[in-house]
Figure 1 (cartoon, rainbow, N blue to C red):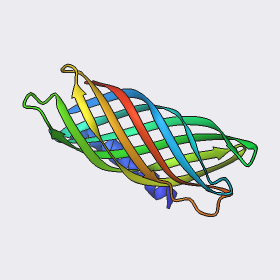
Figure 2 (tube, rainbow, N blue to C red):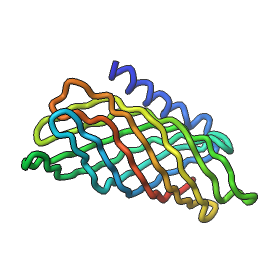
Figure 3 (cartoon, rainbow, N blue to C red):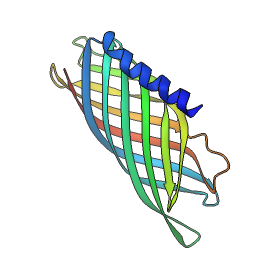
Figure 4 (cartoon, rainbow, N blue to C red):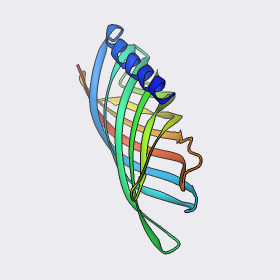
Length: 177
């Protein structure tokens, strides 16, 4: 099933250029909170870093593929754990223009992906799904800034340290081509 999902994500990313009007690449930084259940019952909070690329398919539709990374030291029951997360997502956004000149727009849409979660030396890869909302401001013809909030359900069960949800607030700078 993981292979089928990965093949689907890659197929969409490869087929997107045929439909695209504009492409973009960018980078972002933000805050990420992971809710950890079962043995820890705590949260892991830290800065995350993101790189991304995508396409504007129509005036109000964009697709974004993103990779983000976060690491954190988690303390629970007087024991320290090292927590790493690698998150790969594919998002579909519907853009809602707020200004007549088109420079400010809101966006909302679903997200799917895979993540690798590592506590100390235990590494597992799982599916994730959720959604995001945010604002985009076009600085110029080729540059824009996004401020976004993303909520993801992590779909983990049976793990010693079960990751339940992830929330991200990200500020990103994109370059259009």
